[in-house]
Amino acid sequence: MMNDLLRGERLQIMLTKEELEALDTWRFTKRMPSRAAAIRELLKRGLAAEGFDLAERGSKSEDFGVTGSSSPSPGRDRRGSDEPAD
Image (cartoon, rainbow, N blue to C red; front, side, top):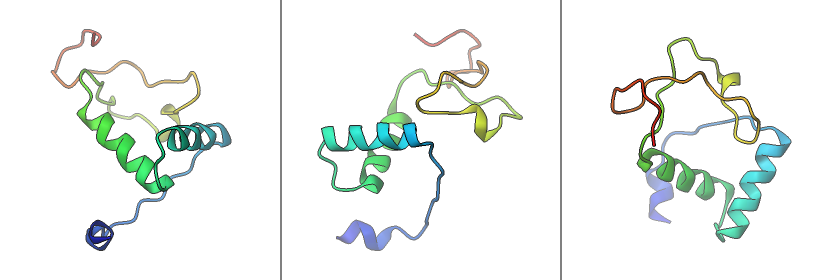
C-alpha cells in the first residue's frame, strides 16, 4: 500500500494485558485490518476530539492509562481554560 511506504517513523508502545484486549476488541468490532491501523484510527479520532485536556508539566507516562481508573491531574484544556471541558 502506498501509505505504508510513506511511514518512515516507528513508534513502540507498551500496553497492559487489559489495554491490549481493549484495543483488539475495538479493532475487531470496527473490522480494522491490523493493530497498527486501529491505533492510527484511534489517534486520528483522539486528535480530532473536542475538549481534550493538555497534560500538566511533569506528568509521567504511568499517569496515562487506557483501561484503568488512573488519569492525569486535570490540566488546561486545549482552549486554554482551567474549567472542565463539556
